[in-house]
Image (tube, rainbow, N blue to C red; front, side, top):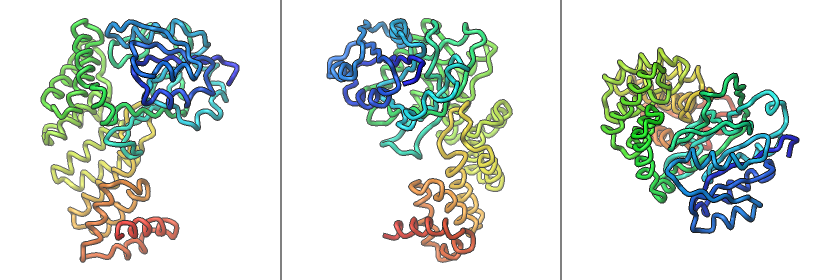
Length: 395
């Protein structure tokens, strides 16, 4: 541990399936573990106590912010780190966590949050963003009943920094959301937040996100539009992720012409947001404007996907862009270029299922030799990797 005293603050309820993994990931860097329990009936508290945690009971009142604020009031550390039970700190973070001067230079520190989604943990199915998880224990509070966050409006001149430490979040995996019935719970809480007039713009956004994840696209679009309107009424530029959700919905519902006109304006607002340019490329692909689509995806490759100021879908600035470029080239009858592009995709993400399916199609195409393309366009090191991939496909 460093000279800075660090408190872990968490709120829990019936987390016996994952709480040990979370606490084990931070036990060696924190000075105290403070658990706020909102009514566990399983082995959660027993497991927490085995890690030396202090347990505080909190009568649930429908507000995650209130529960978190109750916990941080009990913390004695100089700094607070907050996590959820379905998260874990990357093991690499334990080495050198206190090295450098970030605890002296900043008041709030963002960590690299990785959200896994889908049926299982897959490094190719994530969204990444910088998230405020470390802050000085100086009275800062949380706001929002649901999707609570630090209230920075009244924190003047706060110095915000970034620490390249990963937090893995598994709570969006399908098995977990279904087991806990999170969608119904979230919708009820968010609608109550709107009724109470608390950060209505964000509440509408998260309601839209819940409906989107439930494939209820009409309701999702209605609420994302209400979110945009609410932000504008407050004379606040709607955040980039709100536009991302809107165009995700329009793409999912096949409204490509409508989406193209709007996304051009969104890109003007956020020119360095790779996801929006990627969505533009997808829209153009479906509109069969393949040349323009390729241009958009190449812009994605130039931007990359390491800008943690945005919520970024893994691969939009790398392997997914190459995958779509390959699709476009194939439709343009640029067979050799299409093979090269899908290979570039697989060099980055060798297990990307859609690219493996596409490569299989190319391998069965009698019009061109995949092996000849490999020998012509890739060096010896990459050639070995790609031939291993091809061999596995052929088994």
